[in-house]
Amino acid sequence: MNFLSVPAALPAINHARELLAERGMGVLGAWALLNLVVSGYYVARTDIRTETHHFHLMNVGWNVVNALLAVWGILRAHPQQVAGLTLPASLDAQFAFEKLLLFNAGLDVAYLCLGSWLRARAAHSAAARPERLAGFGRSLWVQGGFLLLFDVGLYLLYHRYAAELLALVP
Image 1 (cartoon, rainbow, N blue to C red):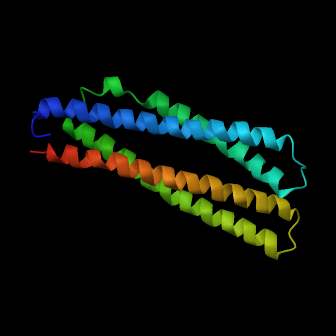
Image 2: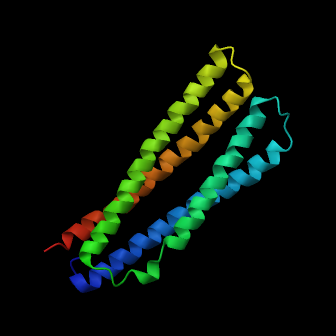
Image 3: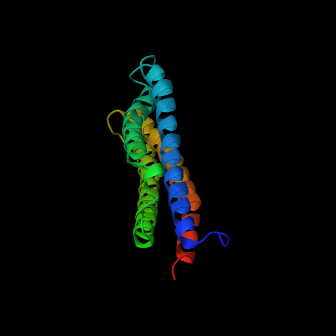
């Protein structure tokens, strides 16, 4: 960034940050659509009394939410409209999104733990419908695992812009 002046560098950094966030939401949306198609297909073709049915059922529910979040994120991203942000506003936006990604990563770990708890409960108790607990637990592992990789990966990619913004602080 040494060859760019602060006025020229800031809009370029902001544009790149917003574009990355928008593309990240595109990845989340693609994951959601893939899960909706595949699990939607299988939920209608599996026996309701099986773990596999409940796995796909939870995937469908989970990815309706993922799809809505992806659409919301894409609609909120404005790569062409952030050129006028000041350095303080840019830093606020940078760190707010980073905090959101880290909070989500913490939730993802909780989803993995909940999935393990459901699987253990299905295997070691006389709970009604253990196949449902096991299927839901397996879905939480898959969805929580993907979301953990997604949130941490997007955080690591996005965080590089923090250093570029901080380098502009006088």
